[in-house]
Amino acid sequence: MTDVQTGPAAETAADQPARTGVVATRRVVLAGAGALGAGCLLTACGTGTTGSGSNGANGGDFSNNPAPAGSKGADAGGTGSTSDNDSGGGGTLAAVADVPEGGGVIKGDYVITQPTAGKYKAFSKVCTHAGCDVSKVDGGVIVCPCHGSTFSLEDGSPVSGPANQPLPEKKVTVDGDNIVAA
Image (cartoon, rainbow, N blue to C red; front, side, top):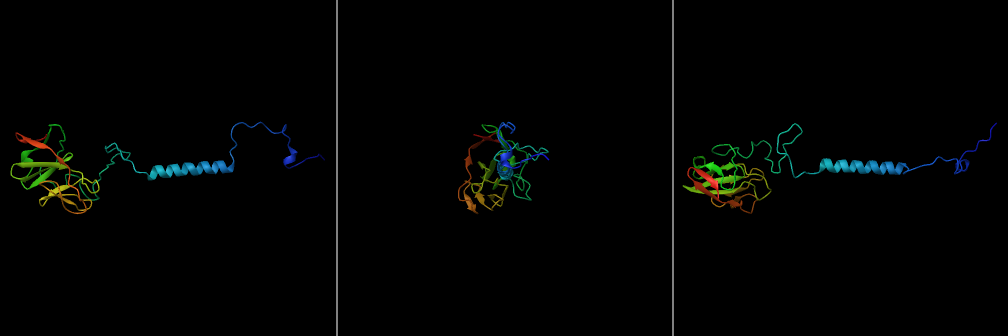
């Protein structure tokens, strides 16, 4: 029979293979897996602030100002043409004929109103309460669908709802048959 020794004293330093690098102990492997899992969870649950804005196959239809479920977007329920023309800086925003007296339209980033005959106003379409886009001009007010805020056609001030700040006014002028950014 041969003499076999077992246990820690059996190997001497000369008998042990040379080890290079870090030894992957169970604790190191589990800590790494936990960190990787936490990183994946934070990435999946995080909220992005940018998006491609395109309707790509990979879900690229992200919006910072989503319309509420069941709505048809910013032009839903508005009057006039539904085409967006947001040239800015003197560009045509809407035709005078598209903006009804006592009402308004949503074009690009603007809500353009005609509170009284021949008087045109424009405001940002972003609600000052929670940042949603207003969805329509109806019943003599600008309507935000997210929480029910309504705003004045005349000066953008809040009429009802949780919003307590007016819609920011945008300067516009009439140039012939068009309303243009001033």
